Structures are given as structure tokens and as C-alpha cells.
Length: 228
Image (cartoon, rainbow, N blue to C red):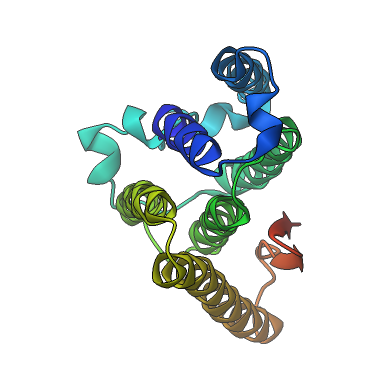
């Protein structure tokens, strides 16, 4: 997904039609170089030994690495794997922050930023659901692939809308961003309800684990999700 998102994002960047990009020397090379650096940084993050318990359970770097065994895994996280999921959530957050920082100098349409960052937030909620034992590893893998496909499809649609440069297309482009925010907000609400139910259940029995709590804050066209 990361490679396709990088290509789609740059296409959107070109479609923005800002004078800023035309003044840049070889902007495609600059963008690709930035994405390559972010990719290297994220892969280094994902070498974290704390993630080792997860390496046979899920694709760490990209959902494209998901295996058939991962898609059909009916198990749920063990205690050591839950700790690894927390570490993975934090590494993913740092990777997303690096992408946002690298993209900032480029005039990427704000709708594209919203689509990508709300998708990242939904991924964090999915991790939280796995951490809490609400889904199996196989369900996590399948839902993760659905998230990736959804992001790619919406970015492609957004690129086509921006290319039309009409009022109606601009309205639909903003609708895409608003719908993405609503979907992320709904999933955050559901995740918080599950967390409260889990805490209530644990308060009446042995305390086995702390649920992974995720919250999303919106800053203009940007969204930041934090899990702890």
C-alpha cells in the first residue's frame, strides 16, 4: 500500500495546480526522494525487537506481505503479543508523523491528507481491537487489507475529481474527506465503548491486562491518533 499511496499522492500533488510546485526543480524526483527516506526510516522503526512476537502473526511493514496463514489465523494475542502490539502502534504513529512531515513542503490537496490520516487513525483502532481480544489475527489481517484498498480507491477517486476542476467535483472531493472523518470518529466511538466494557468486565474479575486506548485529534486538515 505504501508505494501505491506515494504514487497516488504525487499525482494529487500535480493536480493541485499550485504555482509552488512549478517553481520546484524536478519535483517528482524530490517527492520520490522524500518518500524513499520515509520508507527507510519506517523500516528501521519496524526492526524494533519489541515487535518480534508479531512477525509470524501479521505483516509489519505493508499489508502486501500478508500470507495465507495470517489471513486464516484464528488465534488471539497472548500477553507478550499484546505488549508487542502496543509497541507496533507507537512505531506506526511515528512512521505516520514522518510521512506528514515529509509531505508538508509539497502542495498536496488537504482532502488527500485527511484521507490518509483518517485511514491511519482507523488502523490504530483496528490494532486496539486486536489488542483487546475483540478480533482474531485473521480478522485483523482481512480488515487491514480492506482499509488499504479503501484508501487507494478513495485517493484514485479524489485524483479524478480534482482533475475535473469543477464546482461539483470540488464539492464531492470535500465530501470524501468529510466521510472519512465521520468513519474514523465512529470507529473511535466504538473502540472507546469496547474499552469501557472491557474495563467493567475486568473490574469484576481478575485484572489481566490494560486495554489499548486510542484517541484522535483533528487540526485543520490533519488528524493525529495516539494510543497508550
